Length: 154
Image (tube, rainbow, N blue to C red; front, side):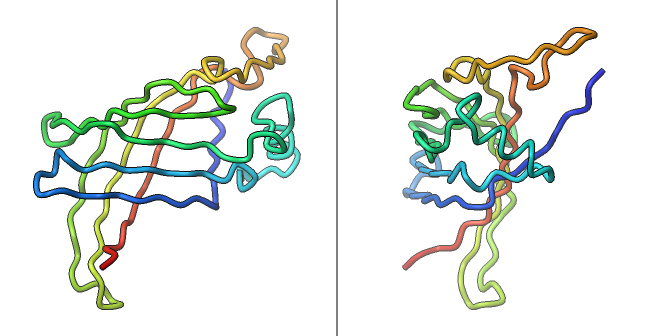
């Protein structure tokens, strides 16, 4: 049994555009892949290499939501994820945590979380190193966990 490795991207930008109806909300996100941090420099460099993310050629990942629908006490965002110039649909489960206004800086701030899962091979990230006892060094399924704090722009 192998342990899951958690990592984060430290450079990203995004925009959430809301409408009168919350279901009209749309979001776009761009992630700088060079900013990956798993807590291990050698592993991070390997993930940036041509074997996996190939950040010299494909420096960013993008997500664009295309729809939002209620799902119990949360929402499901339909969208498109692009990695290495390959785009596939991606559904994210979104939990809204509320709005603070004014925040400590006098602005309006919203909090939400989103989760989803992709198969890296769907995006052409297919390099595998088998383990002696079975399995792969990097699994095919990648779990996504986003913690988002958005500030209202006037």
